[in-house]
Length: 431
Image 1 (spheres, rainbow, N blue to C red):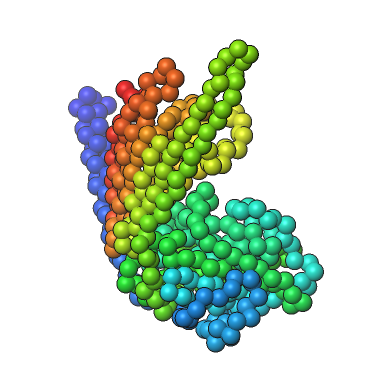
Image 2: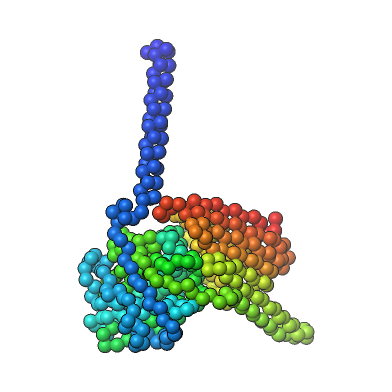
């Protein structure tokens, strides 16, 4: 073939490539528009089922949390009469009846659960400690979406022994942060027909949107010996219990009394000793302060001064056989509150981590003094926001004095999507 013919053939190939690329771009635009329209449409317009509802019964007095459900208020409250089996037979009738009722006082939400079992002597329950993994024993899981945004929420679990587990829902329901701990109580009782539980969650332990009379709500029960899972709303194997957009509704939420909303935790520690013979007595003492202040119902401001992390749970020993660094979970109270808001990048895992709070106050396993820190986090409408700034001191001969901070803003869009930005400044080594 001549040089001219070869040149013409090359031009034709380039034109064909451009046509294909333009066609792919158009297809992408059409798909994006279609997905956006589907996401924007309400569930009813998409042909989805109506969300089931459970009405909260308001009471004027507090009740004793003993797990017995013998107060007269329980008998007159609205109830979930039973759940629907997910495993092992999807859609089947559960082995044991589960009845759920919810009461509300002026400052707390109280959940009552009756879990019937035809063979109560075979109930599987062994954990008794706080935040134990309850997945391999009988338990009941409750999830709350206090902003009714279908993306965030709280997890509360209890087993027949009264062992409690709580967590923050993260990544739009795809994960949960079990290192978060809140103030709540639960008690259980066993009988000839199964077991029952009472759970009291103070309103001060939750952040929620002011003025809402409805919260997202769902319940799931596990019967371990039968490998059975029963659920109230969306009893579908393809739906996770933490996906709050697929949960039911808890209606009749009262305007809770939050009081002053101030929590203060001072601490003092001291030591005295003689490090060696003939050496003077060495005395050491220190004091710290942690405080939180609710700014309305949906925002929390935190302050820490000369932070003492002595109460923080130690990390689990792990062996790293890869060339990638290990990311240990955050367990310090100051950084855990609002950690779901500061999380960035759905599904990116450890590959993209623009902000990792463990880099503040810790350096290669060595504790770095945290002189002062303040943080604010909350949600307003469809906007999630958080800001953090801390000042660290020097450790030994290493200069680690530094001011570090992060700002996070995320806006909910469509039904289950979001767009946001995160910015940070400062360096753990004070560079």
